[in-house]
Length: 246
Length: 321
Image (cartoon, rainbow over all chains, first blue to last red; front, side, top):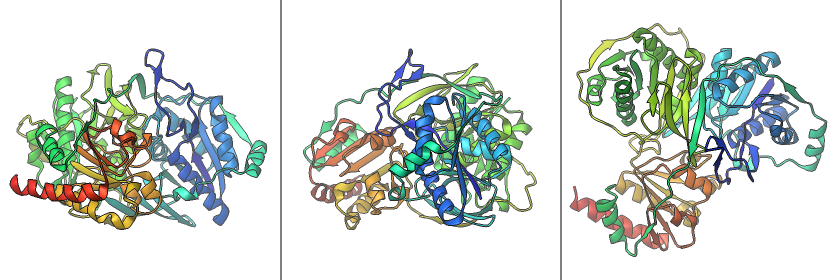
């Protein structure tokens, strides 16, 4: 089985978010970038398929050279090879088109991406990719088992979960649950050394549709002062009379 | 050039978000000088949509679509769009809608914008405000394609009544004999509010000391008709199921009232709940960051405050019902 894990390079979850250039760009000053958490659960599940079922695992991303440390981290975790499409990932439709080209050329059976990136939250790349290549698709996937070409997947639904039966070739939008938080791998020294020898292929983008453009950003209005109350009676009264939520 | 809205239902009845997306679609249609048409699958109360400004309902009745199938739903919505000559599709932020949206986007070569929080800023060019950076910011996004897919955040636009006579027309399409991705089991809590559509969410963190202490959280949720949720450490420790984890890497919450008990308020958690309208924090540490992000707070021991709150709310409910 040949697996491609699609990785997005995102600000660490603890990052404070600021904008620059007249609020038209995300301000990367002082921001630490990491593998998108939803992708990392997928990458770790892919490592499991590598160890237990002999799968080959490649990782791919769309980005400029600044994303390479994140790709090296994925290689240090255990991916065999990395592919970087040399373009700025401005919009989900465009990114999906680029990754579709990578999947077509690489002949992958399984593609795992994150349910969404935690920066632009588009939540569309895995699904568009699946549809462009006419592959099966499972979103918000929290469990994935593969036997031959047969796939059993569990997806999170509002208020519960649904078990799905499908087959390879498949694209998955993954998230926590694919593996547990405690299963996530921190690269060890050997992995980091080995990652330096692994291939990080750079390919040029194909022509694609840019369907959307973020033209301006802003931040939520600052929160007013909290009202601290001494008694539960006072709280119930405020929730009823002032906030009008009960 | 009408606006299509996909209104979701369950067991023949509309979900709460159906009326919100219908209201939103009517507003988009009004701005564009056209009308809104709903696509409704296996629902038995289609005429209700008229209340929210829908002038036509395409009624699809098909046993094969129970339960939801994302690919088939995308096919139906795109056929409806063609039949109506529409250029805009409005959907919700449910897990089903977010499953279908990218399939529809690829099919229609349509720009898709999720997590929309307000009516379009303009329709030519088409510009719209949405959350980004997991609720730590907003983006104003322009959609450049001819066909546009708008994913509306839960509880952001609300429902708006603009009574219209809704005509209901049967709409049928032939589907694949067998779906390639099939549902084999659904495990879902019935009769309880879910984080996705609850008006009130009661959430607790590590301050509760252990999973055995969640009884009072569930009691409080029962009194309020609320959904229960938890912080990330609590779900990582296995005290509560993953599905209850709210925050940046868990579920977003956009309820009217969010009550955080024994949750310190890490930046990732605060981002995930920032769309909730009123936030209450109960914590014994007055320095907890959540006190800077909430509307009301009690500094106190959850094990004393919560049981008292349950009692007072029961009294309040008895008087006000």
